[in-house]
Image (cartoon, rainbow, N blue to C red; front, top):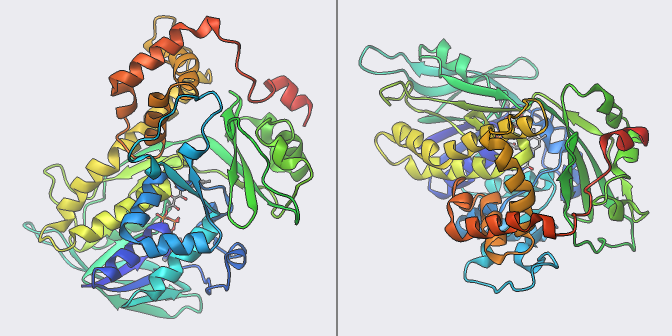
Length: 473
Ligand SMILES: Cc1cc2nc3c(=O)[nH]c(=O)nc-3n(C[C@H](O)[C@H](O)[C@H](O)COP(=O)(O)OP(=O)(O)OC[C@H]3O[C@@H](n4cnc5c(N)ncnc54)[C@H](O)[C@@H]3O)c2cc1C
């Protein structure tokens, strides 16, 4: 098949890689003009205004890592060769987890530490090296070419049209067009323009703002020895330290979008004063590192899912699919977007041989991505309620769940091998969202930990209270 992939981010490049290796002829059309740099560090300077999130910390979860190991081991090896490192969770156990016995499959509890630009650079190199892939950058797609539908059949997409920066119009024919243009995709309008029904959507804004800054360890200095959490939820702010590739790391705050007092963190001095108060960040900022970027803010974050079938399950368009954030987008706080995008892309390509692949792809999305979309929406709701946005009555079951989470689950992760393993499988998308609390052994350990809450010494604080934090900015 001739496949045109619109968008050269993680979803588009994954689609191109999988499709080319399955024997298809692929053209990737990317709006940003981004010539391939020589190295991962040079890619960090890419002008990726079409995907501004590349300037933010990214977690690459075990689900993505294992997909690469299983389906594209050469790409995984190339990532490690480019400076990415493995985060093997069973080799960095909390010191309190003394009776952990390794089990088969534990080696798959492994994520990737890497900057987003490095990940994309390696993925693009692999896609470009695959037979039959052409990468066309500096071309903005602005619509679809389609055979009009009729009462019995929806429109069939047969190509795209777009424009280069100099205004030149370009049309490219295709058997399949894949929209991988990310969260701000215009494809619903493109579909309407060719006579398809508007794809229904569920949109739940995340109401947070992200602030990230990157650093590099100084020559002669090394990663600090740390055993505690790498981040935390302070109630008024969430934060984490992310290990990157090639001696880089980053610190990210996620703040309530309406919290004006915290806006001082968008300035370099405010950010440094805030980061210096975080126990998880302090060892990284003790003089062993220097900043390599300004503070990058990003708002407009969302959970959003679109549907490309009608109420009877029939596709609203043929010859067209949306992958990654253009189809299902989840709050970045949970670090799932790239993993889900890659699962989606490989899933699509696996189905292209079927006569009704559009319907099958919808079913795949329902099965593999939708549960994580719904989980993200629910996690956002719970977090909002817990942060006080929505007062909870004493008899609200969520008030009890909040206590069980804080005083049962989190301590049990640090003391029970069963809970540690199950939590990490859940966090890394290696199971279904509901598996964690549906596991009888896990539930028993969590409830026991909850019952023992008053006999434990209190946990070390993850950071100062809000008033102290603000006073020291
Ligand atoms: C602040 C932030 C932090 C995140 N952190 C994580 C994380 O820790 N872990 C994780 O897994 N995910 C994370 N995500 C989510 C992740 O970045 C996305 O899920 C992922 O980028 C989706 O990939 P994509 O290819 O669908 O879209 P994108 O990466 O956005 O790529 C879309 C591409 O399409 C191009 N494009 C757009 N319009 C056109 C057009 N008309 N013509 C041609 N090209 C076009 C753009 O230039 C861009 O290159 C984060 C997101 C944000 C916003």
